[in-house]
Image 1 (cartoon, rainbow, N blue to C red):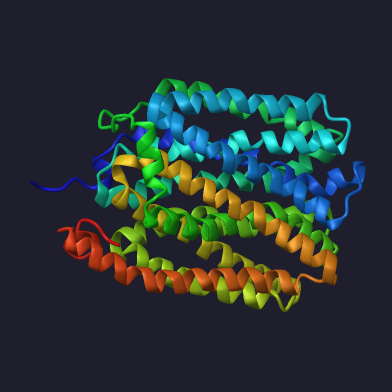
Image 2 (image 1 turned 30 degrees about the vertical axis):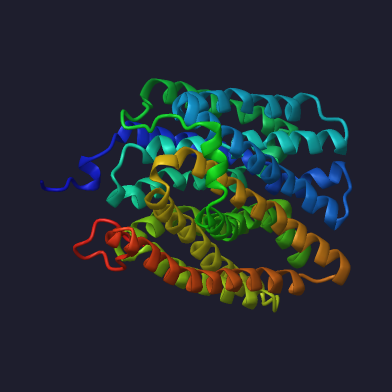
Length: 413
């Protein structure tokens, strides 16, 4: 039987709906990052407090991705996504009308994690419509909702200045989430091939498998690096280079564009050349860029380095999720939540590393060197583990799973 092309297969309205849901949720999830410099004018903070504020939404998203992953498996990704959008209204309302202290703002930041948990529903909703040879691209397109961060970094501080404060931005964010909820409800559909819900005992068995932890580690580095830098770079540019809140967020936007729009490219290239091959190159490039940034070069140079580094991390996100459906296709909803939670933990830790090391040393050199070391450690682990994967999957008759060239193959590792 002749294979269908990507655009002939799947369900395009659901793919686009998943992208929109993830896009608007990501926009809301990182809302505090670009606004943090303006917020600090109302609530003075030291470097660690700033880092904690921008890291809390990522922590909330990491925890709640497990919950949404569970719900995706049991009640379906569409209903889970609808519940997620309704609950996202809560922190937006609180931030708009009810914050009067830094402690209250911390609560709002944590609750913004509801939007970040969208990952656990959006990707299975799209991915379950597509066969394995198209998983990388499908998950990459849905996952390109990372681009929602661009709208936040580009417009949040401008809107805050125009409408008289950062609180108004939370209120304005209610408009797009309502519009996307309506569109999503009309056009998104669950796949008829959605796997049956698993028993609770099966969830625990996943975490007993080494590969589950390996994918968590890999995504902790790629996605954690992307979202952590997205939330922290406005502070970095403001502190290190003395840029205004708007200009700092604008330069952050340039870097975020690279990580967002190259995610589908990473998924596509992983489909063609193999996920492990792609990750090998991308971890090496990311580690080199982060090490170079640690020298704190002039602003034009650091923009280029961050652009290439964020591009590598974004493509790495797509490459990891080319591999996950092939290894855990029947548990994709839960594994998306688990791996996504690990990515969120990485994104939570990254700002804290930069903030604490900056406070203790007065420079960002040590922080970026540590981040570079983490990327290179992931590269070493990948190099070692791929030999085990090849032997294991060949032994189980899974020869196609280990093919590393896209020519004539349907599945690539």
